[in-house]
Length: 85
Image 1 (cartoon, rainbow, N blue to C red):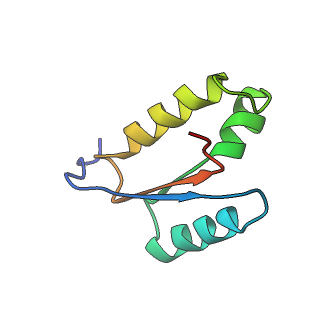
Image 2: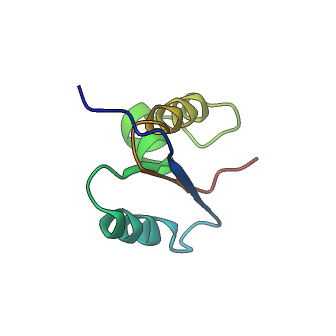
Image 3: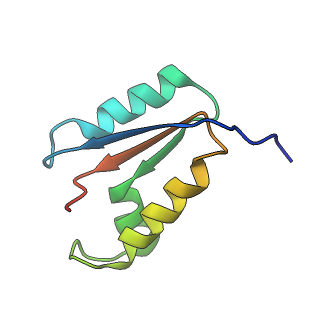
């Protein structure tokens, strides 16, 4: 089992559709390198859960849990998506 990281940096990229969030997130992941966790709202919602983009859908809780998992285990955690409040 790998040693836990005691300090993680959380980077949140949010904005309108087609504004470049995913492109920038992938570039950041490549820049920071191995062990950087990229959590994409679209991947969780569409690919993992196959749910519609509605308030309160299952993806919100899973996004939080995956991000929380990365904190303390990865040096950098990048969360990207429209992320409606």
